[in-house]
Length: 187
Image (cartoon, rainbow, N blue to C red; front, side, top):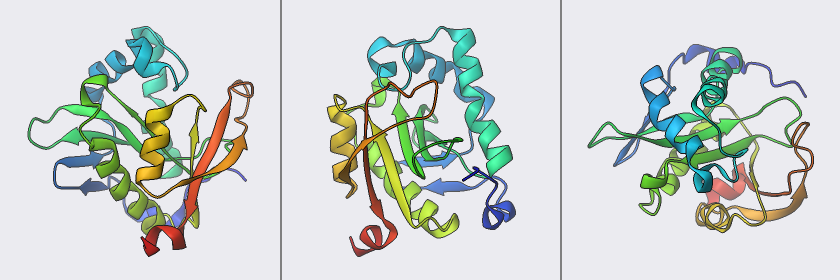
């Protein structure tokens, strides 16, 4: 299945989601410095493709705005309302060859442990099911990434089994976590 632009989303050029503490919006250039910091941090980048210097981080950063332009959805930049600080990215993600419609996440280390990811995930899950019309979501999580597994459980997802990413990441071990639309709205 090709990751084509979703027609219902075509009428919403720049969605903005808000929670009590957060704003989720399309990535902007001013988000890049903190994104580059995230990818420069060995521990923070461990499960999202590995540590990158600034120039390759820039190319990776452009994936999300590009996906917004081409597909009409991608991960949101997660912004702390009180400070305007970029905390991370989270949201719908479906590259070519991906094992399903993913809600993925990556957060700057100084945002860890504050419940931001769970708060943002709830809003993004609602948006993906309601706006994109997805029937289910997955989360591709490294078997050693316990914090992401706990987040998946916290938002109601369960381990569905091992999965496989497309090349060049076909040898990266992942477990597929996820849930259906019905399971989400039953919570």
